[in-house]
Image (cartoon, rainbow, N blue to C red; front, side, top):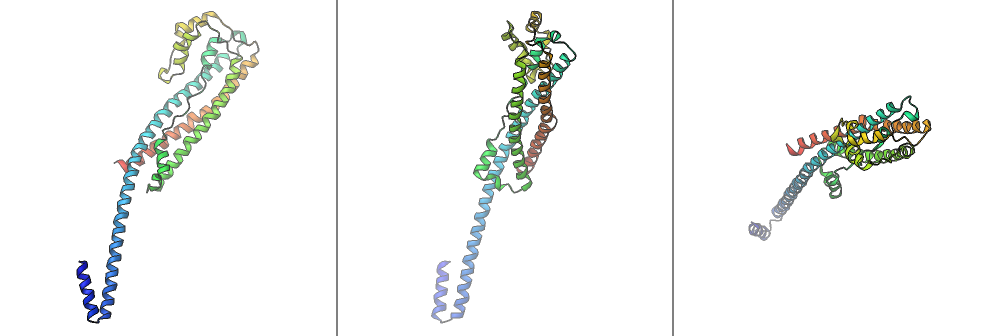
Length: 273
């Protein structure tokens, strides 16, 4: 093909047909430009296809991360509700009682663990999407926006956890001035009662029938204080902590779960189905 163009060009020049040669030259240039544009377009299509394949691969991995987040949040949700129920039980147990009538072992059981677990977000995929630039190749802007909002929400909950942890430490400091943990069987009590009381897998655990609990009950160990005001300080600090837990349990964690489920549905519709 190139040799034909060369022969035609030489023939036109030899015949002194400049105008025809000019038209021919322009046509040849146009053909070259069109060829370049087609090649660039094909290359662009190939690159776009490769990028979208990468986005689809990351989307599938991100769906698994979101599912892991939902499962992890569900556990923390149960722990928070469990702690809140124990605070209610403790408040009811000491209400309108004198210090000498308060059960130390029940006080210990209700306040053994008042903090939920740190969040363990599955961020490997989203972090890789950020660093590799894959996130910007998501064509649906609403999806990329929701991914950004979800990621920001998880960081917000991390900050909430640190605030809750600080508040729980204040409560624990007050609890240590009231609760006597000096039971002879405290190690056995921890393994058979206290651990189960704070495990979401043992919902409705009837600790007051456990032998180790009954041993502690029989020892009649008293609380460390004779001042009811110190007991009320504990209750007040726990109720304040409970107020923040209610926000986690009733607002934030349900919203986080709903956002994750919505993202999963969008990603599956766009990149899986």
